[in-house]
Image 1 (cartoon, rainbow, N blue to C red):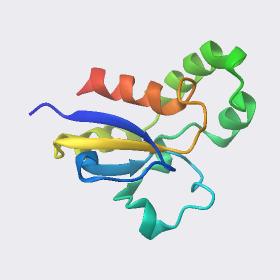
Image 2 (cartoon, rainbow, N blue to C red; image 1 turned 60 degrees about the horizontal axis):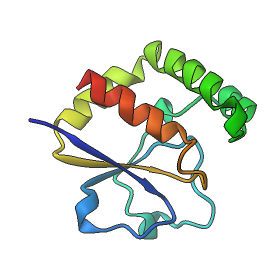
Image 3 (cartoon, rainbow, N blue to C red; image 1 turned 90 degrees about the vertical axis):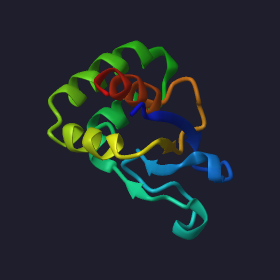
Length: 118
């Protein structure tokens, strides 16, 4: 079964088309209640490490280096395989993230990486 993965900001309204909603950030989004977010799973273990997140600091000039470093983290992250097995059980999944910059977010990298492994 093919798994469809969507991306959505935590500040956008959840809806029925989101399917299984997974927060893929290490920190809970500011100002969002757990009830309002409709998050089914908080997968902070597949998010960038705190050190990498702080280094990147959402600086678009560091994007390409960040991508390489985050992919390196994912390849050596033991939680990724378990995460993939969970996704295989879902038809539609939405990776939820808090970043304002929708073009330079780790969620894009994570989605691409996971889709290649599925």
